[in-house]
Length: 253
Length: 252
Ligand SMILES: Nc1ncnc2c1ncn2[C@@H]1O[C@H](COP(=O)(O)OP(=O)(O)OP(=O)(O)O)[C@@H](O)[C@H]1O
Ligand SMILES: [Mg+2]
Image (cartoon, rainbow over all chains, first blue to last red; front, side, top):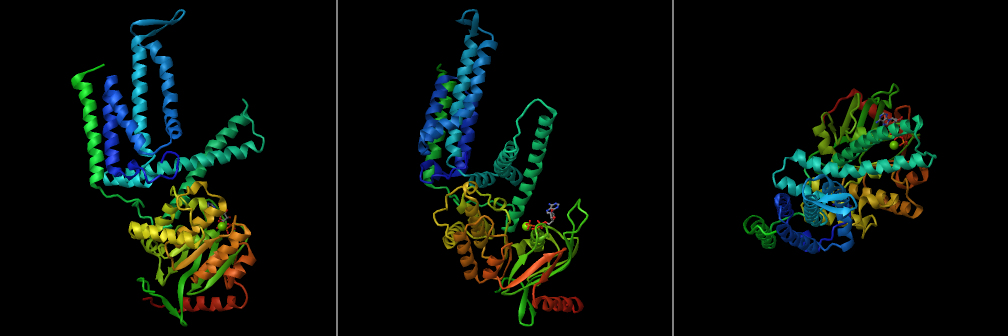
């Protein structure tokens, strides 16, 4: 689902019921979002890394998946230690950073990565059709399901239209400068992007109704809850209780 | 062929698609694309449609499928006059339209899902849809492409995959909009082979006489918003159209 790779259906996570997968992921994300103790986040990490393991992902793909989140987090490392008030630590000459700021940056980094790992294991093992169908099964209104599906679908359409247009400009020797010509060309680019994406979206929709689309998505993988799904989900829930226990009862670290 | 549609009997020949006096102008343009256009597709007819760029061939297909609503004129499919969107919804399941641009047609992540999309919409269960999709892919020579990503196929592969997606619905009539664009000679020959073996009525838009002469029996051309059947058939066609106009008849 992340980069439109075909899904390896043999992994345990790929065969895990998508509805339970979604519920588990949402519960997990909410829990991690409110947790503040590193020990508890450590336990969360164990769960999410296990899920990634069960997804049969390559190490390289996991790193690739984590890259965008960490490129955002890196900015926090510039700002938080300098802007949060607290005990100062000298780092370089007159430059000081606050201990609280660093702590906060560490916490956010950990949380973001733990959540992202869980999301990667979900996204890499569920295709959009299945995800859409599972969301519909969970009672999400069909309008929202369609919005989800088409947003996903057309992001790629818009991107490819953008690349086509940019190439069309480049092969005719367009070099951006600070000139009216440049601004006008960019305005055309954005305008054309909108118009073309709109047209393309309409044509794709027409093609869909020609093939009998009536508003319902069917997924080829289909799903039926089995004992195995219940067991995996049960283990996830148990482990989340452990996380909560460490966070709110033991209150370690 | 009992699918709930009455077939209009006409000298022993059924009429599948009939357009009468179709006129259409795209919004914002002042010259009509179609202007008083008549056209009939009979059972077991294979028609090749030629015409210069922008003469309105694609528009004609879209009108037959109810994607574009003509300003004047009537569309009759399998003997039923198409009035509302609801009429077309049913008709579309029996007419397979191959779009001029395959990128418009393929939208599922993988080839198998895309080919199975139509059968699933038609109420087939997962196992059946999967079987149909795999069988159709084999038939068009795309076995092994099941898990390929649709956006990452070559132009020709997309074309054949889109054709498989149309054929998987087992339509009664095929409308192919320039099926040969982007195909090499070998693939083109394979396509000709597939189409000849299909034994279905069809209309093929193409700019290649050679291809049309191998796959179709009748040649029509589009000019100034109208269609004319070439050769003697041309005359014959108009007599039919005339008879229909004077003698309204019942279907079913
Ligand atoms: N969405 C649209 N809005 C306005 N005009 C359009 C639109 N689509 C097509 N046209 C115009 O209608 C005319 C007929 O277009 P159409 O696509 O039916 O031609 P065609 O015969 O299929 O051509 P080609 O052989 O190039 O595919 C053209 O002049 C075209 O510019
Ligand atoms: Mg065309």
